[in-house]
Length: 253
Ligand code: 6GU
Image 1 (cartoon, helix red, strand yellow):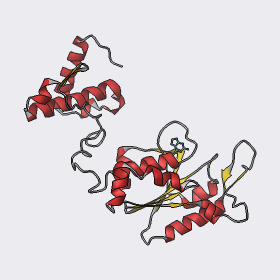
Image 2 (spheres, protein in one colour):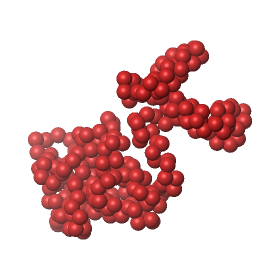
Image 3 (cartoon, helix red, strand yellow):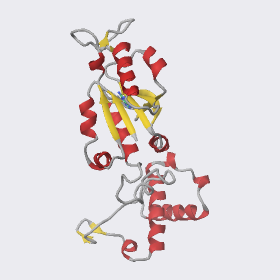
Image 4 (tube, protein in one colour):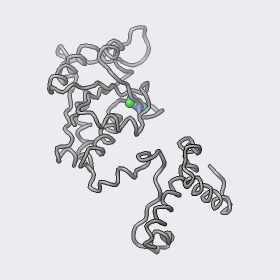
């Protein structure tokens, strides 16, 4: 997959994507990243990329011309067509479903804004989709672009060493949160590993994990849990989890 990033700080993106799974995906040729700086396409000695907003108000707005020239250069760098995605708090919230959809495309162009944003005429003309990574304000789209890059890179075939681990992540299989994980030592002053995980009974382990995923989702993110849509077996596991929780004298939330 190829991702082109339009940003006033392309080195920032390259740095972010240099480590761990994303860095390895690049080394393995599964992901090709290229940064493009609108300043390289700006006119005049000052290479101006922003200007004051019409109508007044604080902050600056990114100008049409440098962005349009930069986008044209990025598009022309590959023959594969690409959707232009603008990272903005006004965009549609990013979900794992959206990540899966983006990860299946051969190419993306990510557009990062700074300051108060980008001239709306450029957005209306050149942008195919707008995406936000959550209801909070960042000073630019770069961190959001890095989030998108990470999330799609790890879904590229061969990016993860254990092919199974993507399928079991939170949200991935069925929109549930992940179960807790434990490693050595089995016994520690902080507590013991649940006995079932050491039992060697694979069916019992799978049941326990499923129950923990259901229970955690119920406790922490009830908005993700569609109880009517659960199987009979899942409903029974959740029911038992609730009973135990209530017996332990805890309260939901
Ligand atoms: Cl995509 N950009 C900015 N500037 N802030 C954000 C965001 C994006 N998503 C959440 N907050």
